[in-house]
Length: 175
Image (cartoon, rainbow, N blue to C red):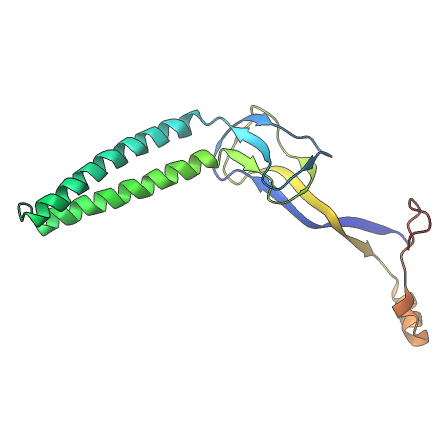
């Protein structure tokens, strides 16, 4: 009987944001470590968005800080203060999102493994969540064997199923 060897853990890796791949650093068969950068997108637009978000956050923070002083001095209404606070919170959330989007322009290995397949090439435009590579962890493998029912039934009657072994032609003496 023959068996199919399959990685116990595998994943198709993709970017969380859209963009053009400018650097695909590995090819099928290459080993990668967890956290290692596998590919990069052009991050120019994401850097611009981050700069804009930082600027808007700075203004919103300054306005909110002034609003804190003015509300204590009773020179602005509670409603105006609440609006400044909401603008500040929105600007902070937008800044965090822009930072994340910039970080998402780098595709990193989620575990140690081997690049099993490459789905795209450099200078390709990708949508978010579109697979870039397949990563397989070969430290633990599964063997898939089709055993005929007649052998399973015979082995079960004779009590030999517990002694079933796999023999590898390519690795002599290994069971």
